[in-house]
Image (cartoon, rainbow, N blue to C red):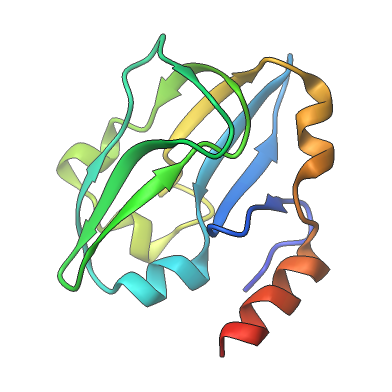
Length: 128
């Protein structure tokens, strides 16, 4: 499942444009399936500055620990506190209630460098 309205990174994060230069970020359905059952999510604090491509948190599953990368530069303006007690939301609804952070973009043009749905589908097909 690769929703058309989202943008994607090669590290399997999705990005949804919101109001006033903010974006919502999470990991893709492909990523959560690769991880298996998510048991813990560590997110950056609200107010943190993030740089595109840098690790900003972790997603721990029964199989491994993976970094959450910032797909864009900006300031963290919200974290999904529901994941603290219910990390399995990442598995059950990665594009909905399983979102992770919201970032106020440093530059609106940052979205232009992210992949569209078709390019992301091609990437995950290459991985099998």
